[in-house]
Image 1: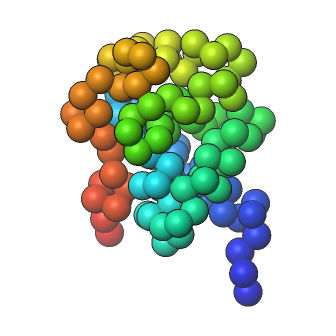
Image 2: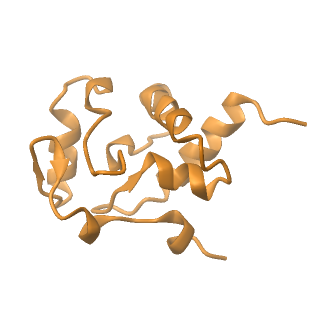
Length: 113
């Protein structure tokens, strides 16, 4: 039986909740971890609705593969994503994380069984 979009979104939310404070990941890394490598766009759709969930989802920690804050316009304030990242010690310039490699969290590596 195929998974529904809401099932996939919930799996995305579960992974995003595991991203440690002060770390970031990408839409593609989450999709890859969930066995849906070509579904990074769907992960983005999940992040777009993350703010409407009952349980907090730190969507600000999910970026595009180049470290750009492409989801910033889905926050109540277009500067909030950057502000939340900077509050966690992550430097952002020109809507992108500075030194992405330092802060990058790959669920495939970090969540090994």
